[in-house]
Image 1: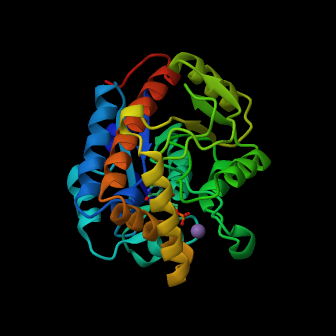
Image 2 (image 1 turned 90 degrees about the horizontal axis):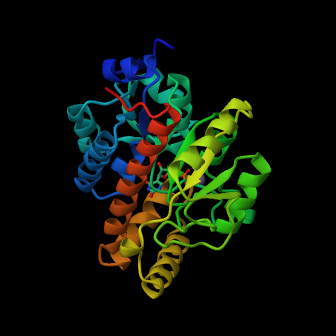
Image 3 (image 1 turned 180 degrees about the vertical axis):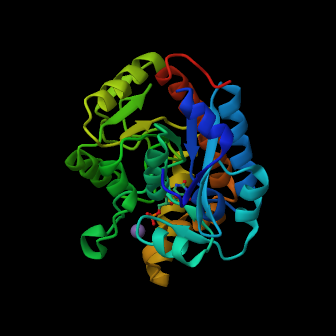
Length: 307
Ligand code: PSU
Ligand code: MN
């Protein structure tokens, strides 16, 4: 392990005994949810992981150190600092070099988790191919990371603000399997179904874990997307979803929002346009993903939870 990467003792012990660890990203805490709500949800995700018998490892950068397993106080500090940077593969090293702090996206978290030896990671929705990408070339580095490092990412699909069919096409090109848990279709984050088919469907965790284990054992080298739809009782109503999404996308186009700001901007507009419901849906699917990721990690560890 690299000297710039600091693994919390409890996480290191659990990994050393091949027990279950689940990585968590921090950009959803700092940029994906309203201030305050982000930390609350992060702590709820950690609690859900522990209840399912695994150890959570929130990942972020504090004062130039890449941290795997942030204690609650540090997580709070990261979330509370006003202009915390959103770190992906491209700007991670500059922040480390300058001794700055930042939250890690799915892309950066996959990279760090793989370096630390963590196989399972829970998030809300992965980044992907943005609408209008044929003109803007805006494709999330999350897909790059999935194509490079062997980590299973449990998510409720890709963020609905994206071009979902093209995101699925790109994952196929990159050779990243999309495994559906109790679904045949790739979920659309706020909604259970987005249209495109998954590569394979599994109806229980043991069968899913066997497929993930086979993927890692074959040493394909790539990651795996585990598509876990938002629970039906928390799904956003279809009409509200479509109207809010159309409005949010129009707002972004009118403002000329670009680059790293696109995703946080769209998520905030969805919140405004759904009267806060998008945040409640986001919270529900994040906690659900945390639980499923912990169950997957326990199954991959041969049924051994963490002690
Ligand atoms: N999905 C969410 N909320 C988020 C994100 C994804 O529900 O905040 C974040 C993740 O950290 C993801 C990032 O990696 O947005 C993608 O940003 P971009 O499209 O700029 O790659
Ligand atoms: Mn982008």
